[in-house]
Image 1 (cartoon, rainbow, N blue to C red):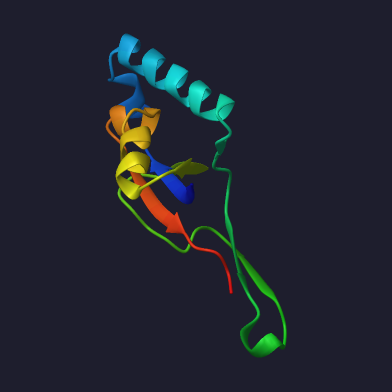
Image 2: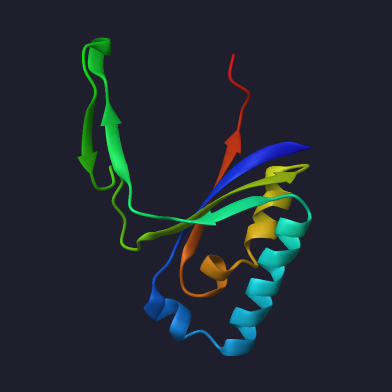
Amino acid sequence: MAKFVTIGYGDQDGYDRTDAAVRNEALAHDARLLEAGAVAGIAGSPVQVRNHDAVGTTVESGSFMSSALPVAGFGIIEAATIEEAIQLVSKTPCAVAHGVVEVWPLREAP
């Protein structure tokens, strides 16, 4: 099985305007993914870390990425193909509640 990093983007407004039954099924789907071994979490406040030329570390509050929606959470899932990974995340809260989920193949480091 291949591993995929998922990044969910969404906001409270999109979540709130989604039918409660759809939200509840999405939350149940997340619970099933966790039971199957997925690793997931809600995004906290990020920092940017730099150590250019290994001469000194600097840390800056805030995200480096920018998007129309805030990052809501991250996950690592296993699936046989990217198509299967897409199917799995298509039923998660960010995907159904007017957000978006990115799926990144996670390749082994050399």
